[in-house]
Image (cartoon, rainbow, N blue to C red; front, side):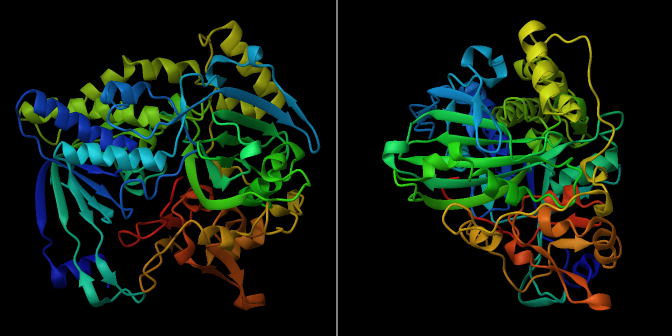
Length: 562
């Protein structure tokens, strides 16, 4: 049954009305809600706010490196330390290294540009910070609905956004309601704030409907793959931060890796691959596994005898914005706004987005509060983009606006030019670099590219996808339609496999896509159960034939300590 048929038979949906509806319970969405409630409390008013979160709880789907700049958090909750925010490990040292296959060159710290210095920042589990923000929001009277997916944008007759509908529960694989069927509900707001993270599926629809990206550069993304390890205390250096560039990436492929020492003998290791890569044989997951075998990296996982004694605790993957200010869409439209990574505010040079999410959440929250209390509804919150342009965040993003685009000229040129822009020009560049293609347009035909032979995993330091997904605690109700949908079921074999050697099986970090069968029976099998909601397929599919939609609420990963 189609959604329209389900509504005709079982509707209408129950509706709940709020002043502000927030889609996404990450740092940005929760900051929006907190800021509205703070202002209302200061002025003795009641403004109702609801936050929808598709994960089982706030923080369940949050994945980040993460080094956090506390600047925005301090503005939002000045006494966060006293309130027990889990920012426990300050950064003590920065190391930036360029890797060749067997060696490394560490850049002396005095030559690092300003964006590469992390003094005053904290190594955190962003999931834990998000969970804490959820507690602060609830204490202020924010209603949080975890396990509820925002599946559909609802519009007024005049075309303005009036809210969202949550997904139906208990639809079987055949599309028919089961015994557990439950109709979704409508959350209606005077304003709806979209805070879904990078490549939010409703944000994507809103951008298209209102043409918010007209005249802007196409959005650019990377896929970040991360593992959390417990290592030997003798190898642990609390607060030490290492970033690497170079091997195993080719010079023309944007990407890099990190190793962050948290408290409690834990290290977060991760690898970011720019999704504008050209070789369809490249596998971001395998590049990450290979990177861990570099002598300077594997050192942290081994004992003195060269045996891997460290223990891998968890795994995850998530697409991240990488384009910055040049690709920022218009962030307001009738009845709502885009904030955080749903809009693309992450600062890729600093590899930080949580401070930007919190700041833009605050600015949107302030604009929504003023509008609601002035008796307005369903118009544009024009005060929000105006406040952003006057903020320290705009200044920060403007200084680093060319960072990613220099990499189209290769690693060496990018390193030199970014150094020149930051050291010599101090971020005041008289030029702006642009990109004209989306990530999915960069793949070359397989016939023009060299296959990449990746080593087999050893199960100690390097792993396969399925054992990795297992420790991400990913689960979906098995009897539901696949949330990874195809516009045309023939395209994966007819075009993607024939022309690009089936890149779906390589760019997915969770083993969702595999080609099965022989000859004319060949088909793409979608193992939706494995999906960690990274959104890479929605971004990188060369034919844009894959569309990610929300599964049942509560499905997906449950990241622990990540």
